[in-house]
Amino acid sequence: MSHWDESRARDVVAEFHAAALRSALWPSALQNLAALTGAEGCMLAGGPTSSVAPICSPSMTEFVDFTMDGGMANSDARIEKSIASFQRGHDVVTQSMLFSSKERADHPLAAAFINRFNNGPYAKIKLAGEGPGSVLLKLQRLSASGPFSESVIEHLRRLRPELQVAGKMALQAAEIHHDGLMVALTLFNCGAVLLDLKGAILRVNAAAEGLIIEGLNVRDRMLRANVAVNDISLQKLIHSLTVRGIVPKAEPSGAIAILRRGRSPILVHSGQLPVSHEDPLRQAGAVLMIVDPDAFHAPQMPEFCQMFGLTTSEVAIAVALTSGHEVEEIARARHVSPGTLRVQLKSIFLKTGVRRQFELVALLLRVSRLPRQGLW
Image (cartoon, rainbow, N blue to C red):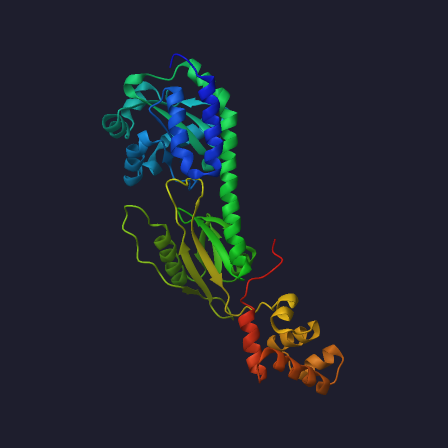
C-alpha cells in the first residue's frame, strides 16, 4: 500500500468500537481494515482454550467455513506460535517471524490454504484476552501480493492500542450477557453452570457450587459426576449441547439424575444457547441447570406478606411449619401457648385460602420457587 489514509484509519477504529457493542458490524469493520492495510481480508480467531467463534470479513467467509468444517482450526499450530510470540513481547506478528520459507512450504495446511485460496503473507495482533485464551486479529494477503510493508506494519502497530480497546469492550459486553443469564437463573433458585462452545465451564453460580461438592466435580474445566454411570449420562448430555453446524446434531438428552450419598439425586437439566457467526465474542454455548429436590427456599417476608396479607409474625409461623416443626415446638420458640398459636394458624388459613396444615405447606413450597429479590 503506497499511501496511508489517516482519515480512513480513524473511521476503522470507530467501526471497531461500534462492533464491540453491536456484533453484526464486525464483518464490515474487518473488511474496511483489510482495505486500509492492503489485505485481502481480516478475521478474528481464538486461541486453543478460547471458545470464541471465528468471524471474518466477507472476503474470507469461504476460507473460514473450510477450516471450520474440516476441523483444521483446531490443528493449526500457527495460532500457538503466534500466541507464544506475543507472550515474548511482540506487538505485531508476521508470517516470516513464525516460519521459514521451507517450513511454510512443508506445513501440512499449506497446500490446502495456498492452492485453494491463494493465501499469502499475514500479520496478526492480539485483540483481547491473554495466553491460550487470547483473541487474535489476523490480516491476510494473497500470495501474489507479497508481504506487508514495514510502513503498514508500523501503522498497524500504532492502531493496535485503539483496536484492543474495542476487543476488551466486546469481551466485557459478553461478560455482561453471561452475568444476566446467571442472575436470571439464580432468581429462580436454580444452580447454573455456563458452558462454552466446547463444553468447558465458563462460570458457576453459588447455588451450583454447593451441589457440585455433593455429587459432581470439576476436572480440567469439565464437569464430571462422581459415580461412573452418572458421568456417562452427563458427558452424553454435554456432548449433545456442543454438536453444531454441519456435524449431525446428537439426540438431546432429558434431565438426568446424579446420585449423592444419603440424599435425593440431583437433577441436571440443559439448554443450548443460540450462537451466531455474527456474535463471536459471546462464548457461552449452553447452560446446565442443576436442581436439588430436597432444597427448600423460604419465601422472603415482603413478598409473602404482599401476596396474602400476612403479618411478619404469621409468615414466620408458616415458614416454621413448612420447615417441619410441630405446633408445640413453634409455640415454645415464640414464647406463646399452643392455643394462641392455633388461633394465629387459623388466621393464616383464612388469609391464604387453605383449610389444613398440609395445604399450607404445599402452598409455601410452590411459592418458594418464585424468583428471589435482593440479588442485585
